[in-house]
Image (cartoon, rainbow, N blue to C red; front, top):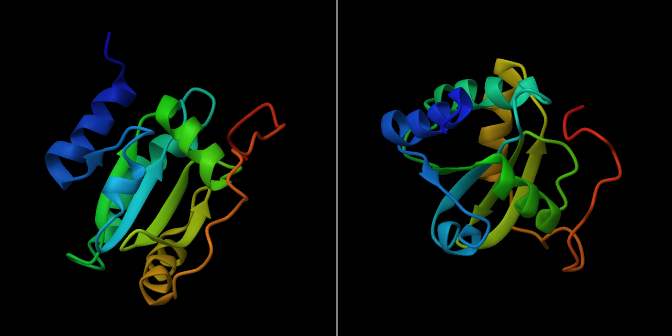
Length: 144
């Protein structure tokens, strides 16, 4: 059965061109150009996940055509977050031509989010976080 949040993720794809990304598709998704992957969480435990799913597509309009955007559902997001060391959801992972650029975790005020997106476009690539072993966060909630 589809939840309201599942429907919101579908709207991201239908209205804003976000690709739905599974845990095993991250490398292929990020292989060319600048990409942003939104990692989500169940909105019942992390309301900011719902907020970010609404705000991010609008913020990306400040940088038209610059980012290839994707979104992972909560189950895939948990696996992806562990792989990339994201300890707080929602999170955004940024890559350029398959190389790591950075991540933003949590919810952002509008001006700070638009500015951070621009900073990610200007940032050099860097070493991916972690040592290849998935991170497991000890906190009870993926939010905060």
